[in-house]
Image (spheres, rainbow, N blue to C red):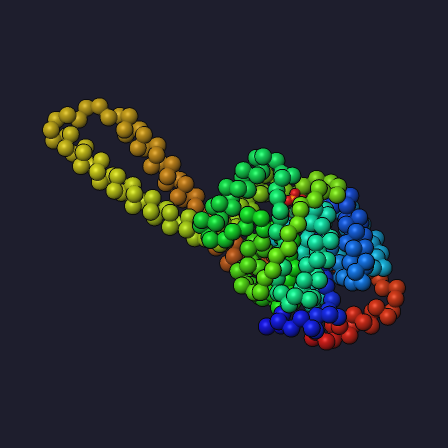
Length: 336
Ligand code: UDP
Ligand code: MG
């Protein structure tokens, strides 16, 4: 695999993908901090900002960026398509031999990103996963929900993502594999592990947001949870079948009992049982239909085969040094 030879990675370029959604407050600071940290190690990355339909002037800030220590590029979506789509667009437009995906609010420390880059360059890994040390900065309710969700995912899809994050470094080989995956609804966090490529991990402490507020509403998180479970497991569908069998068995026993009562002339009361049965079976049926509905909706969305996002505008920082420009061109030539 391309990733095994680390000696030819010394001169290779790195693209940092930053999905941004209403991050006007922090985007400049983030880009400055990241390029500063990389410059200190003598690395000049390409920073690719994917504006996920911001409405707060984020794009103007992106277009105003001039970093001498990094090459800044921007892609603007026509509307908010979600972080998964923003990451997909990032992978699609990244030019580097490795890409690092990180949040644009400095919650993922740039020093860790640099550590990932060094590990990729010298260690020959294809994937480097950022693993959260703790979730202590999150609210109790979020922690409980996240715990339940990961427990579900672990038992239903055999994927352990408890401390996983979207903070990752991917080798070009992995980027190309992911770009070839045809599904429209993606769950990036689990996709990299699925490829089975040579992986290493780097631990990091989730930092406080550099500014602004979280862009995830509880509803959006719930949707993400449902989406990812249904994307990686069909066990909920089989549970419906098992529940059906369970109830059938129960029904047979109850039917025998009812018939016996009837025959022996003891059948008078029993309305409570009827009501309870109606309620329980009704609820189970509805939940089952709902589960099937989730999968049908997924299939429906996939067969429509719509693009994952629509790009309205792109931005490339005007190069002041012509030297750098030729360098990039040679790079691109070598790639193609
Ligand atoms: N984000 C995005 N589209 C969205 C929501 C979030 O591109 O619809 C970006 C956001 O700008 C940030 C990253 O995804 O760079 C993580 O979002 P956020 O920090 O709000 O989430 P949290 O860290 O609270 O989980
Ligand atoms: Mg954040």
